[in-house]
Amino acid sequence: MKVVLDTSSLLSLVRYYIPFDNEQVLFDYIKSKLHVGEIILIDKVFDECKYISNKVIFKDLFFLEDKNFLQSSGIPYKTDSLLAPSPGKFLRRVDDHFAISVQKRKLTPVQYETEKNSYLNSADIKQIILCLNLIEKREDVVLVTAESRASNDSKIFKKLPAICDMLGINSSTLPNLLLQSADIELKCLKRE
Image 1: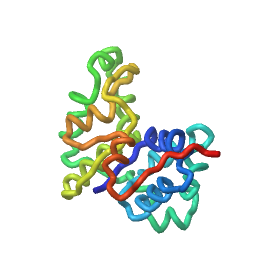
Image 2: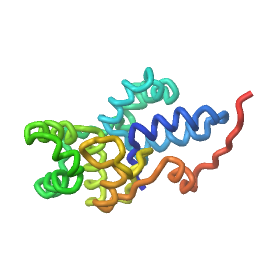
Image 3: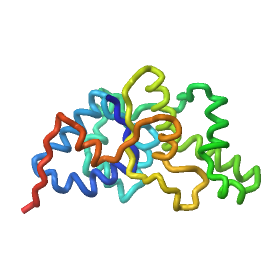
């Protein structure tokens, strides 16, 4: 199975899980899965991590700044030339299904096009497109995000889990992914 991790999941990982990972079981698990390509970190997410909370993700997952590790594992996954299967159909879905009509109506056509172009270059949509391409290649894939399905932030486009539901992409939270991972045994210990 391929796992596509979003920025919010990585942030949750370093804020809420790694501090209790005294034996580095989770740290080593994430590192090994990234190294073999079972966990995919796209370039847009990698770039977002540079600007979040004083680079806390890179401080705790310090191997993400090791050039040798990045090169040998193909991190970050390049998305600049990645296209959605059936690009025309996908763009219509962005307009008709991913956009929240109430929010869309508040904008002029020019404002909406600007927002849409920005969205089409975002980490969220690049992760969706990657998942669609992996599914087309008959890969078992899950997009891991800490986002909820509810659109409660006045953004123009729906949240990742809602879009995944529409497109038939499996999505999960980090806790659910870890619970379902048979090859890791987590122990929570309070640091002394």
